[in-house]
Length: 608
Image (cartoon, rainbow, N blue to C red; front, side, top):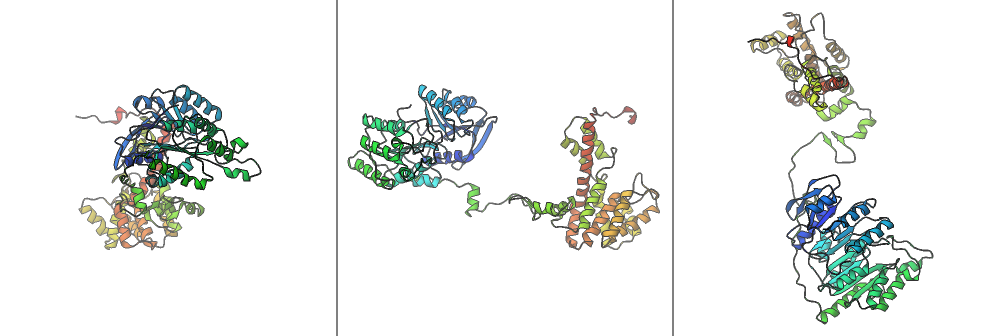
């Protein structure tokens, strides 16, 4: 066990098992104390490497992350403290691994419930190799103005109130981490503050004892008095009794053992810590307090009197001229995290993205304000979800069912169309699903799929302006523009597209108005007089019927309809639908284990 100071203002630690909050609290404490370098040299996150971004004051820093303890120790040979935030299941193994590293002198084990046999092995190894264990079941420790472990002393506000940003004259050791925070505050009120504070942990077998640290404090010149907070159960306090009796401690020791209330219970009492268990008289709080009092420690009559006894002991040292005046300083303010400042209303920060269609911040995601559970409970379908996410409103059932019909009818059109062909070739090249899908989607445009939007735009413009089919078609011809939604390579007057017929039948049955579709049919009648294959195709049917859906539902203003058509909503419907088929073709080729595609020579016209 070390015989003197174990931390300093240059101490650096390796932090095992990444925990953002305690690491940031350590770095904030560093900044508060005016340290030039962060106290966390590296983070060990098994199986990971790279960097973690944290703040050192107002500066954002990158702390290296290592996959193993050995790698971290090799990378940071000056880091001699190992802060172990592993669970109780793996804390012993990782702590032993750290103790075996030549560079590590101090290991703090935060986990509770480390098996006692494992704890004994760790203690035996540490003592044989002159290393220090703090814990298990500890919050850690702090050297005021220099270094602190993890969450020791709590929030920055508490640290400032306890004056831990600069060294005082009191050495403090406790079994309880929670009570150590209370005593830091108490000591700061009635003395010049803590020089070093340690919580040894509440397990039955702590890695270092109360007396270990009192003997250390006795050898640190800056420590002028010590405060000890023990608890009932075990016999750790008696090693301090023996040290006091043998004259090994020359500085005043104020001590109190908590748990005097245990005598009020008729049966044996187990308090919060594994070691805080009422036993015989020797393990009782009263027995320990009396033994410490008899050995020369200053022991109050109750916990309530502890503060006044600490004050009296300190003031006596001041009167004797044994305590130098500690100059008070004003610590620098710790910059607030942006999230915290925004939440408290101290700053206004601009957002970078606006979303009006979904919100995942609550207990469940919402689509256009409709909770996910409602969508499922009401039996909504894909069409309803599209209406919420695309149109930001719940459309009538006939509308959402029409959307679903469009998706089903447009899902696929065989392996020979350009999009399917591209996906098939890409899949056979061994590429992944997303690459194959995107390869097919990239062919969608004015000649493949994209005609839905154009059909809606031109049919709407012509109908709204009152153009006859003749004026519309001939006007387009003069501009050199083919009428979108009219014409098919295979279908004709005598071989109509079944998909178009199904859509028209549904609209006639369910839509309150089909004025745009009827106009498109009149245009078709005129174009068929010119050529037998200038028949309405599925793009024209969907484009014109969607105009009827938007205008006939009464849920969209004229401006909204114009915007929907202009933005390209209807082409989005084709993209969504055709993705189903493209994914299917990709899976089909991979399932069949098809080889790399090579276009046949005989299908190419080679010419000069």
